[in-house]
Length: 108
Image 1 (cartoon, rainbow, N blue to C red):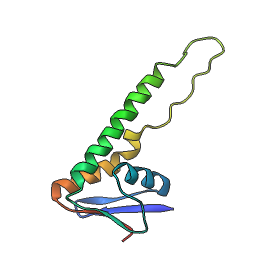
Image 2: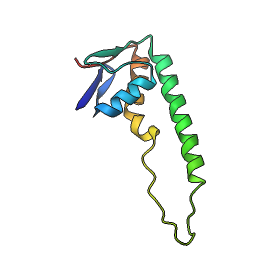
Image 3: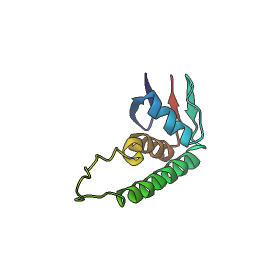
Image 4: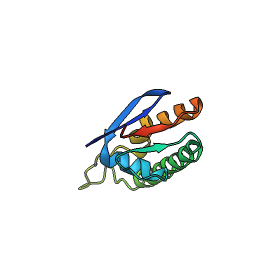
């Protein structure tokens, strides 16, 4: 299922429900049929998402150090897309909403 996030400050952001649930959970909300991140909650929501991105980047950097590239019998594996890339449209929306002092809504 697709979830559409809306705010007056930028275009809609559409994502799969499992990613939406994960990102909304990071900022301290629950993904229901309808929801809102009010303008007065945006500062904390942005900080939580940025902190999660920083943590993810650190963990990915540590994982990158464990590659055994060039060793015989070891295949190089593909690294999945990180939280920074997956969350960028949502984070961008939160920042735009904060700048315009507007709410972010879904399910409307």
